[in-house]
Amino acid sequence: MEAVKRWRAGWGYPTTLLCVYGFFSTVKPLVPFIYPYLTGPDKNLTMEQVTNEIYPVWTYSYLAAMVPVFLLTDWLRYKPVMVFQCINLFITWAMMLLVQEVAAFKAMQFFYGVKSACEVAYFSYIYSIVDLKYYRKATSYCRSVQLLGYTVGSVLGQLLVSFNLMSYNNILVLSLVLISIALVTSLFLPMPQRSMFFHLSQSEPPQTPEGGDRCAGNVSTEGPVRARGCSQVFLLLWRDFLQCYSTRALLYWSVWWVLATCGYNLAITYVQVLWKHIQPSQKVTVYNGGVEAVSNLFGAATAYGIGFIQVDWAQWGELFLGSFSGLGAAALFIMTFTDNIWVCYAGYVAFKGLYMLLITFAMFQIATDLSMERYALIFGANNFGSLILQTIITSIVVDGRGLGLGIIPQFIIYGSYFSAIAVIFFLRGVYTIMRVRQSHRDSTTAEEPPSPTLCSPLQG
Image (cartoon, rainbow, N blue to C red; front, side, top):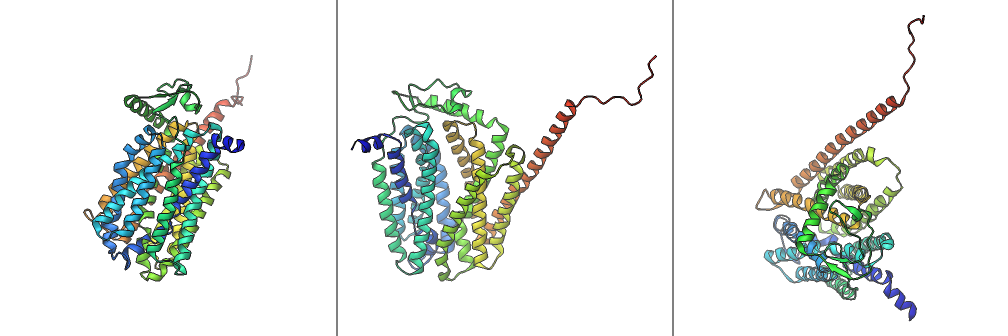
């Protein structure tokens, strides 16, 4: 019993519960088959209704909820927002099972957008409940479990559909059961006493607007908690925001993050529509789950491999971003213009793996020398920026009230979009390499002693 008490009092207990929560909230076997389900005999929605009317609501609601949820997450100290996230996830899947009208499916997308905005609480929670020395382990466990959940969900959905073990409606019921387990688990999470911005430990050192001890990430979790007012928090966030983005390298990596994440989210959201267009036969949808599972594992492998590449990223990083973004654009164009579903699947796996590789690299570069508070701020600001851009493109290109383009013109735009990113960062990378080499030559020349004059005058 004493060992159990020690375990519950340490970092292992909340991390274990968080992993259980993360696993069961991500095992969703119907996700690879949502589009066939909505356009099939169960719901009888048309391709235009799903693509141009229903799906865009998620983007709009996500954007509207993101900033309020970000602030409420810290003010309420994470746990209530995680419970609220699970409730919204349950409502989303329950509505998908029960409703039939387009307006009801739009409301469903609204709840899913709120759920997406609440995801910020998942990783923020662990940093408020465990000691600084366990941050890396806890983060590694939670990310691995989430990936495992997505993969298990895709494989499970593949098996259930391929062998006709369950109908789509029964798979939805199974998903609701799994979400219920996550919801119950969230209720047992310990309530943090502190948060990153609103609720601070009295034993923390003073933090200046210019950074001070904040940049060291030296946060104590002991001692009584003091609360900050809203005006103090907003002022500190604004000053930190200006301070962080005043660094040129961080600004460039953040620009890529914003641009690429926007394009990635658009392509991932509508890729099932593209698959359906290439192969209209309902039978082919049995492979969607396997492709999603392979893409998740390939993405994880490429992201893991970035840690073993020893390169001077300050010199070669932007060229790396530009070159691999170009490969991502090529994968999108291959997906768009092929008539072979397997080639399209392969392009999707390559595109997702390349993005996971590059976003891991960008996150690593940005996180260097930043405290956890500042990283959370940059993470939120970059995602918010990408979501604003995604909303603009969705409203113009996808929404029926805008151009309402079909799926092939959409993916031509997405491929062209990534091509533009590739050109910008490739040229920037070439400029950076030339500047570094020129600087190195100048410094070498300055250090060399002057050579003796060959034709010196005769000395008298």
